Every structure is written in C-alpha cells, then in structure tokens.
Length: 214
Image (cartoon, one colour):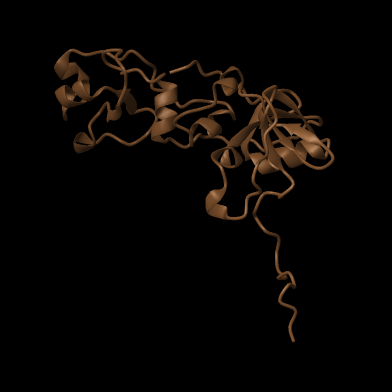
C-alpha cells in the first residue's frame, strides 16, 4: 500500500519557508500562522526591494525573497529597512525586511543605450507636470499630433493635463501660441530602467533614482 503520508516529489516550491514569521519591532510579540496557500501570501511577501551596486548605483528591483537570500548569503547589506520595522524570523536567525539593499562586491553591468518610452517613464521625466500649463499631469500628448505626422517618441511626447489635451486637440503649438515648459529629450542613466516599469515608487528609493516626490 502506498504511503499516504509520503511527500510529493518535484521542483522546488515557490511558497515562503514555513519557519518565517512576521513581527513588528519593537511591538509586543505575536504568533503568525504559517502560509499554506499561495492565495494567502500577504502583500509584504510580494513587495520589491531596490538593489544597489557597491557604488550605490541602482541596478534593479528584486522580489523580497531574492533580496533576503542575498542578505543571508552575505552578498548584500541592508541600506534602508522597512519603515514599519518589520522583521522576518526563522528558527536560528532574523532578518530586517529591507526597502533598499547594497551589494558588497561591485558588479559590472552592460551598457544599454536608449531607454524605452512608457507612460510611467514619461511622467517621471516631466515630473508629473503638464508640459503646457504646469498643472498636474493626467495623460500624455503628442506635441506634433499623430494625425499630422508626429511620432510616438521621447522627442515628441509630453506629460499633459486633461484640459490642455482637450484644448490642444490636433493643432500645433504655433497655431495656439503655446510654449513648452520642459525639454523633449530622452532620459539617460540606468536608473531610468526602473522608472520605466513603475508608476509609484518606495519613498526610500528617491534619493538613489534622482527623482523628487510627485
């Protein structure tokens, strides 16, 4: 008769280690229930952590699990921890939940020329302000409308408020007497590859990405 209690074989499970407990520090101790189902994985497990090179240059945003592995293996150090003071506990150690970590050894990263343009990256370039009136940007606009030959590029797109977008329609700036408040240039720097994929960023990341709060 087959052993009903035999554990299934196969690849590694993606579930967090059952030994990890989440606690607040320095709040009173409390017991955490082990995670037994993927749908029950709390939001903090799915969070991302900013990885810096040894020179404090931003490299990428890691899943929390990978960041903790780097810390436990001695390959990285915590630069900024979780603002709420969250700590992961196992049977023999504890690790502060990080927001930003830094590699102990410098890693050379291949240079990539042009940053892909996304809505999120464009908003960051124009600092979430309308390129025409300076108000809060809600959408993007083609300076030279697509209907008049304009291209969807860094050099022809700007952040824009809904009102200016509606008023401008498919007209050119010289037809309206408008001027731009920002330069139409592609951003440069590896940290922009992080901004390409993120609308909102952890406030602790701002000093390393060179981005003021929106």
